[in-house]
Image (tube, rainbow, N blue to C red; front, side, top):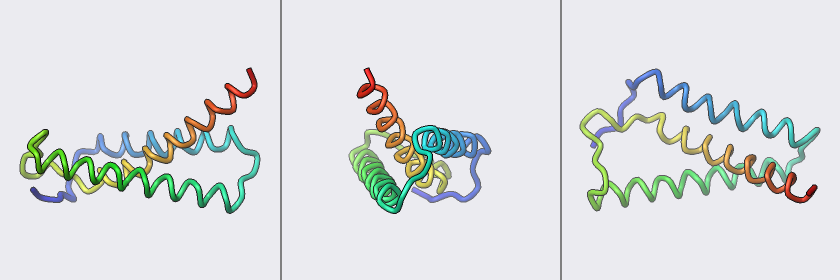
Length: 101
């Protein structure tokens, strides 16, 4: 298994899709956000990437899936982090909508 620094440009679309969706939801949900909100998002992001790393390591070590040589791009990890941040904003946005009903 290799970590690859040369990967398809499609990974940038996935990464920036998560980051931009996170930013849009964050801006729509808050007019201002404080230190507590930023700290929560950092913990969610770190927790999300830790979960994804553990999932990847378990799945690879048990043979659930296999990355062919040259197919474990390093952008996978920041994409997981951005996905966790987006997930946090999505759930918080849904929570706000449901409380208004």
